Image 1 (tube, one colour):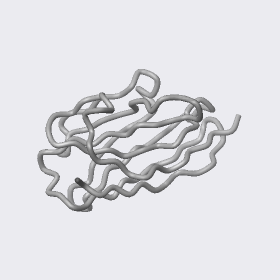
Image 2 (tube, helix red, strand yellow; image 1 turned 90 degrees about the horizontal axis):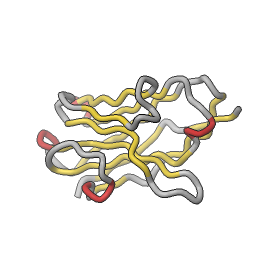
Image 3 (spheres, helix red, strand yellow; image 1 turned 90 degrees about the vertical axis):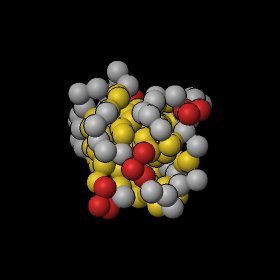
Image 4 (cartoon, helix red, strand yellow; image 1 turned 45 degrees about the vertical axis):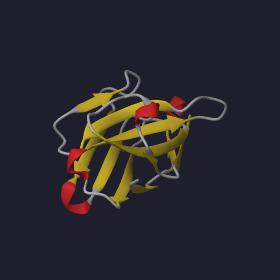
Length: 123
């Protein structure tokens, strides 16, 4: 499995921005897909965005489309989630995930997970 470490979470006011980072190691990621998921208290972990390691394919949840952007930096073995126009309902722990193969939005398709980083959006 890949090792994934998230960073960049924090407290931000509604309308603000944050950029989450995921440092990936332990594998050659050329044929991997990377995803961001989030989990709010009392709710199931849900899909946010996913990208092929090359950056050629991206998927977004409808709730974040147009506000969030997922990207990769192959030289740094990193994945980013730029989050703009944040809303209180975006408050959650955000998790980076990896899988070998094509991009999907299904949580169970991913076999490597980070520990998560908390994002809190105040109204």
